Length: 186
Image 1 (tube, one colour):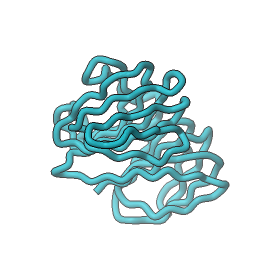
Image 2 (cartoon, one colour):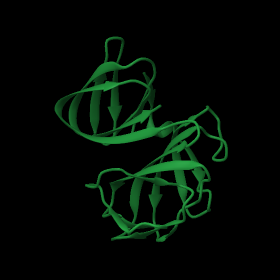
Image 3 (cartoon, helix red, strand yellow):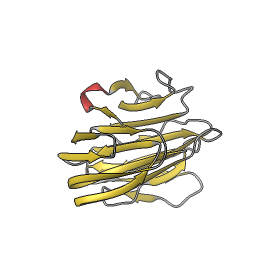
Image 4 (cartoon, one colour):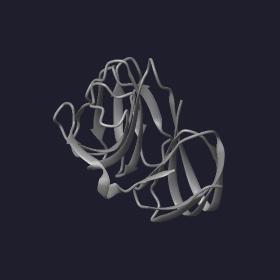
């Protein structure tokens, strides 16, 4: 387990220049938006507009804060995405635009190179104690304080901190109150 504090995230402009992203984690380390295998980031969307296109990439988007947005993904019916919605997966190389519902939102964005990596994003509510079976992936905290424990280590996560997980599948216990996202990478 490796803790990633929100203060350490790399901030960079969006590929289309329309905003700023806080890069939480990327593989391989130091990869750019052009050559990553997987990338996990958080962004504030302050206005309506098109998404950047990423050829060969699959994306999953979750709204963390704000009222939400309507996504218009080419070839699909428009989808309303709010903090109560399940994470939404779609190809990042298909024209997509967003219309905000009531002001800026903050989102969690997971992208993987389709030919190399498969991902799945799960939203979990921690009602006091939650046990999960995990292997390679990342936990992202939307709670004010979570304690994560496995056989080998414990970690304390604050709001918008993350925890990278590596190795064979193991049981982890999460204690606290609030929401977390589990990003599984294969």
